Length: 481
Image (cartoon, rainbow, N blue to C red; front, side, top):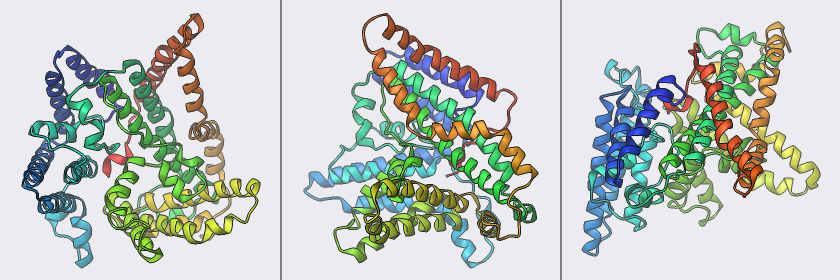
């Protein structure tokens, strides 16, 4: 069940909100939320809800073990190590066993048949942050198991993020929270519109111009230069709107209940460096690797050589986290090379260029770098990725343009222009100004409130519903990570 499905929009979400609203006490509301979260998670994978419950149970025990050690004046490091071994071992088995075994030959049938549990990359990291923060003394060990399970299983974000640290929502989950229904509904509707009205059409265009079927290397090699660049731009927009839409909807649903999840995207395509791009893209993942991998390894405090090694580890793990395939490892290393080059060479060299010239050049550089990086991300088949890289520059003997690419470009010109504009902060700034104005007193601010919190969400819901009816193309790219 995905957020942008008619079943979720018109059955599951209203039922969960109504049941939640009917509950009086915070305990009853949390039990209701846990029930619907487990139903949501088990909808497509009933068996793997047991894995989620088991991992939450083990990490609950490990945190209690750490707390007991602290009462005796000990640190409880053994419990933390056990949590890391358990959680990383389980995600390694379910996500990476096929990749590891393939290094030594064809994986056996039982390895190939292992299904990737939905959202395991996200809830594993959340549980690890919980145990680690208890070990560091930044959070209290939770005495009730079902509280830990609720934290890990929240259906708003357990499948595809954002990664939420236990300490950031502990008080709202178990002590006191205040719902922000108008703001939550607006944020959810904006995310739904992003997904259905922008991500899906961009994805359909990308699939048309950049096929990923390994059986079609000839068709891909003959694709025109224009067609490949258009397809790559469409994919870049699709993956941004697809993932940021999910985060928007998760944040919006959280607000409806009084839970504040962290922001996950901040218009990354306006960046002017790889470092800035990753401060704006999937921010909760970047914060996790910074606080739980990079800084514990020493960060940049132990000299250039150690800093380079720490960056290499973080970027390799970032790539590997996204998928059990070598293209993701190469994608992570690609961003490592860019980040390292910027840190020790490009940034000092760019400082000598006048600012009016440097800023637009830096932006063009980042856009080009991001687009080329998405080729590695899209193609798990590396020979196909190589074909695309060559074709982007006409090295396959492919034409510069052809009838299909010109036609697709003309038919989707307004879509691509509006999507590109929507990837900038423009609409966010306008909406923020409207929200600030609507908070005032008087007839005009009142009318603005009606438009912002009533008409705009309603229009987005209606347009999105129309886009979903009869349309079978509705993927969520990050569900497979």
